[in-house]
Length: 187
Image 1 (cartoon, one colour):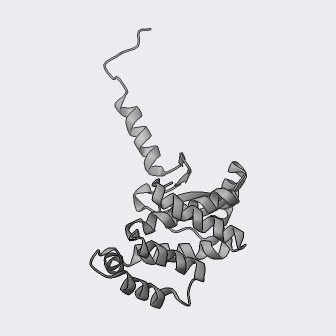
Image 2 (image 1 turned 135 degrees about the horizontal axis):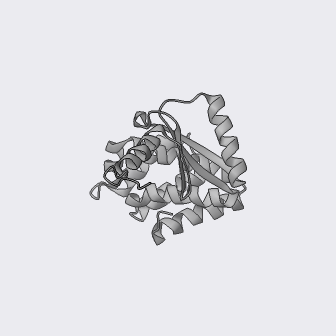
Image 3 (image 1 turned 30 degrees about the vertical axis):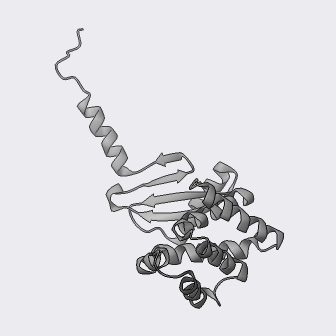
């Protein structure tokens, strides 16, 4: 978790409200939308966190952006965060909410890094394999890193499986560096 008592308190409160209202999935989508918006708009983030701009203007701004896009409970949380001057915690509140949601639903997040973009079929097959291995629902995030040359790296929680060509080349390089050519075997 992105541990801060402030973040956890807001995230847990929203989670409990969403659970009580039987709206967990809807609120989670709202939180993901808010998080995406926050991470993609640096200028808006600066404006929202600016201490001189009045709370009423920030709330008006948030209402204009989100009034038809998110649930009223999610919008109320945003307004409460602004009212209490916790705007700089918004990103981590959202991340904590998603983490609480995942724990509640038994979902693990996996990051699949490959040297090139995989087809949807390959992603689905890899996701199914990871789900069987971890006996859990998997939310798969993919990344492309051309430096891997080929193969893949799979990361779930604190476990990582590196099946990349770059890693194999590094292992071969290390083996060759450890060969002692001066040490002759006696027969």
